[in-house]
Every structure is written in C-alpha cells, then in structure tokens.
Length: 73
Image 1 (cartoon, rainbow, N blue to C red):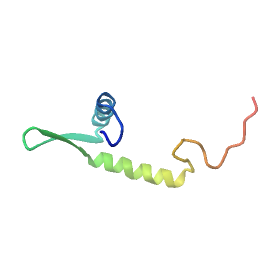
Image 2: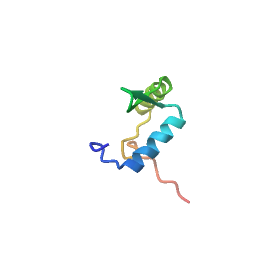
Image 3: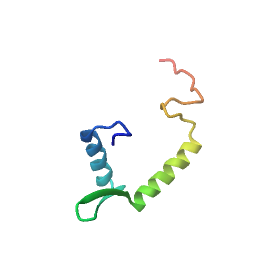
Image 4: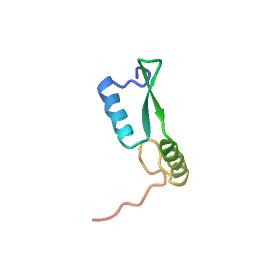
C-alpha cells in the first residue's frame, strides 16, 4: 500500500472491485492476518491482457503509438 502510494480507501475500493469480479480472493492466514491472492480467473485475465498489449500498439499513457489520422467533422 505504501510503496504503491495508494491510500487505504482507494485500495479497499480496488480490492472490492477485484473480489466482485472474482479476480482476487481474500484469505485468512495465521488466524488474524488477511492476505489477497489472485484467482485462476485473475491469472487468465492477466494472460489475455498481456496478449492484447502485444497485439495492440498502445502505450502506458493510453495514447496510440501508431497515430491515427484526424477525422474531419
């Protein structure tokens, strides 16, 4: 949480979303410690995401590397 520079409220919101999508699950370890683990469905989604990144020329900023021509209105 601290290394990612994400506050607790935002992190909780992200984790809740991932849990509802069945991409991550909560696990209780050593009686009181809670950890989050990626599910098989989550692994599959990451695999497809990686494949799409290789096929689609999109950078991390979301801008198309191969610039599309402007469309006149």
